[in-house]
Length: 216
Length: 318
Image 1 (cartoon, rainbow over the protein chains, first blue to last red):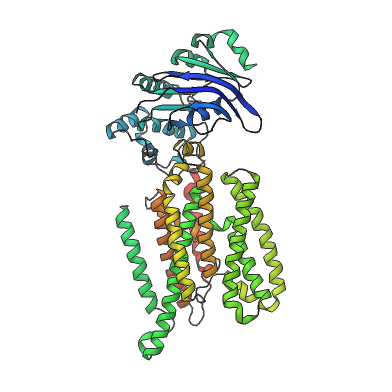
Image 2 (tube, rainbow over the protein chains, first blue to last red; image 1 turned 30 degrees about the vertical axis):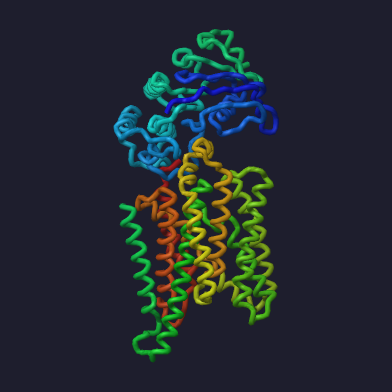
């Protein structure tokens, strides 16, 4: 399924206090987008808005009705097996073909875990399963909060390759990350969130010493 | 295990056990005059049907709540429904004249259950967050105050306290046909309601955010799951008293057989719990001659070791 562009116009959002204000951007299919900023700046909130998990307090946001979402937290109680989770998708999303799912299982090295319940796996393995699930359905866009968390270096590499292939075949990827070197080498566009304001910066700039000031 | 096979096998076993249950009992119906035999058959059949309906209500409610509250140890009683029923039953015995008790006791019990459910749901709405932990915390708080009020009513009931205690321990012998039929209707509607929310529960097991990204309104589904499961539990409690462990343990047994999708899990947990209670009822009235054991005692005694087994199986879970 091909993604629609994500168009954000004068979007404000707050829980009890304002978190994001006057957010404007247009994200296109085939783009790999990173969101950067210090802890608590509103990165996850922005991802939730883009994914339709939250609705803007004001402004207009046109996004894809269903996206592949992977948050930071692991599920509280999930009795399903790895195999069942890889096949668990929204009603409007067609699961990938069996051969594609087989390929994802091999890529993410899930074959030895396939019949185990998610809750019996280590946290790194659980994150791997939940990431692999995104490639087992025909999602138009994939949104991941902290994609590299808990993955070993080899798995980080595999995930980067899979996400890049996903954008090359027409999909859209939006991630929030603190790994500036990974963002510089992998992503096409970068946005920063500072004091509730969202701004685009050239991707190459994220590894400059000046950029580090956004974390002060 | 193959799902259709399991479904047919369980429903068949339930029907067969009910038929066996009519024949088994302290009095052999073979040597009785026809009229007495008919009477005993109808009495036994009524209580077996009551046990089956209570089982379906409790098993389905337990399975759905474990999903809706994202907690494998969630039990319908945790939301205060049993303490509300206890308070209703104790009030009936303390305040009503004896001739009215057969109607007043279940009536006030279900009123108490629904009242506590209203308080828990209202409390969660007041707090403003429909998260699983909020339901559990508000449930525990409401439970505590209602349990205290129940004890107060038990003191007020004086010598009639035994009625309440026996009823609280679980008993199908008082169930009347109008009550059984009414409960069966609630049971079927509630079971259908919970099953229709199965897809949402599947998605919710991946976390609230992921389920929302699937397009489900998680708060609404959690809210309605709690309401329907509580109504089923209240129905069960008003007919059979408080029968522990079944709702907690049975969904895990069904999961061990490989059924994890909530639509099937809710249905098969209901049937399995019905089978369990029918067997327990037969045991309760035939194990000790001329004495009927409270069914809640049997389910708790059987349930405790199984509960430990489940905890042991989860020892590797972080």
